[in-house]
Length: 336
Image (cartoon, rainbow, N blue to C red; front, side, top):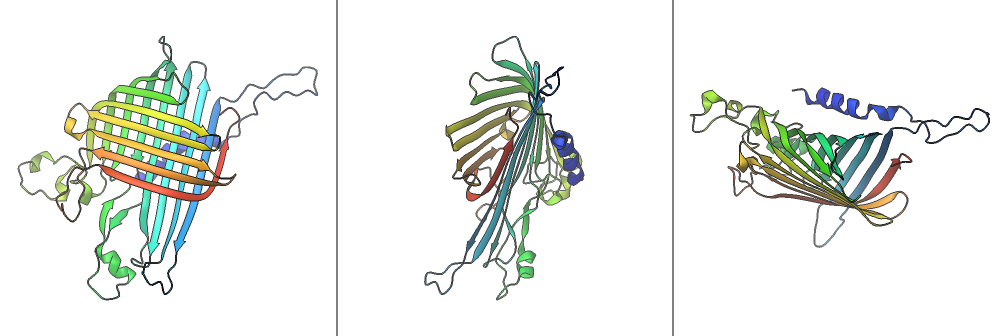
């Protein structure tokens, strides 16, 4: 699978309408006697971006330390269509960060996440409930490695690169889900969605990662005790249900808390169900500067996490946290 072309097509089809400028809402030409009000735009959009930089420098520091530099950024964009009884909601989130340390003179990935979610909703006869069709895609945009210390003295960047081991890559893993169900929202800050018919596709494009990300063995190799990496399939199909709980709360005028809990239950293999809990807290300190606290939690029953004490991998709760201060730019349509 050429993930770059696939990703480009998906993003283009989803966010292409942003390229066309919407008509201003309720604009009236008072210079004419036959005044006609323009129809309000059906598209509602928002965009939030942030870029942050940190640097640590030690000079004759008694307790020691390594000089480091970090560059991190994120994009959070939404594009919604509102028309009668139909509502289409799209959201794109991209988080990416690079760390350079004097200890390891090679760029390292501090965070990497791409999440695209689309949902089509239609009003049902039940109050506060809408029929729902969903699509979501979760992966990353660059390769991520772990490093072991080179055996040579004063190792160069090339020596460090020679010891690296691939941990993840674009669409390795990649999670694609499509579901049918309903969504319930009584309060503006809370939305609960349940899709009892959810079809999933898990991809692992890199051969060496297929075992750790739970790819099934090809049928002709199922009797082999120690299968090689190439003996695993590159894709795994899933069928189950998905529950999502979205919370968006304005704590104060300049503080916002956004959280999403997602639980996928696989009808065909309950032990491979997974849970994701993503939380972000924004504190807008001034017009262009924001403090952001991010927290990502994952439990995936099909993923084996490899470390020094468990070279064969094990199923564990995964946790990732970030605290960032940086330049922020936001924009939104008038009706958002």
